[in-house]
Length: 248
Image (cartoon, rainbow, N blue to C red; front, side):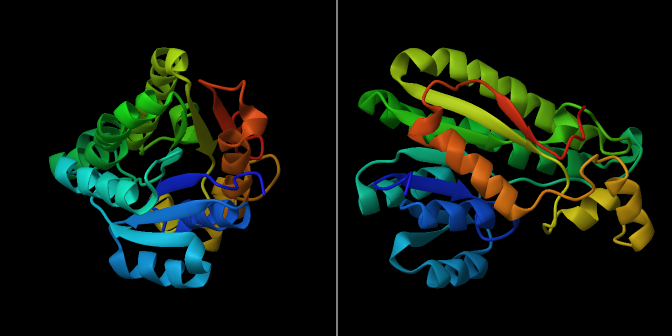
């Protein structure tokens, strides 16, 4: 029960890595807001979590929507201890010059602008309380880019740098900021990363992972729980790879 009494917002929490984090956090005693563009998915997971979770429909790329999410959490709990910036999107594999401007803008809005918007809304509250933890879900793509995912790679590299910059600035205020770098996992984005979900394409991806398997939502939940708990009270500004050795 490492998170007993803690409150946490998990964006993109209705499925994939986000749902794994939600399940782990609630099992460790946290109260969790499942914030997602998928209203039905968020509500469905809330019903599985019982009294430990609430749902929020949010567009993380929209400032007003993010502000309403934070307002709902404050009304429900009175304070916010943990923010997990997990919501993310990718463009389909393509040569960098062939990615459409619309797809580029969407990737940057969801993967980059959202981190700014949630910080703008929540950091003042954490500063006032002189405590808080922010965890950004980045990617091994930001460390060891894969070809044909160029602008997604770049967005995750930005997130890693933002994590370090946020950590340095917020440390004097008692707020820790870290990131997780998962390798591709069994999530709704897997097919988008690969372009097509075939045994041959999976084998190609798995061949780059020394441990021979994808990241799972459980892997992410376990790592996130540690970094957001008091056990990691001396850790800030890191981008922990949860990748089976992919970045070695």
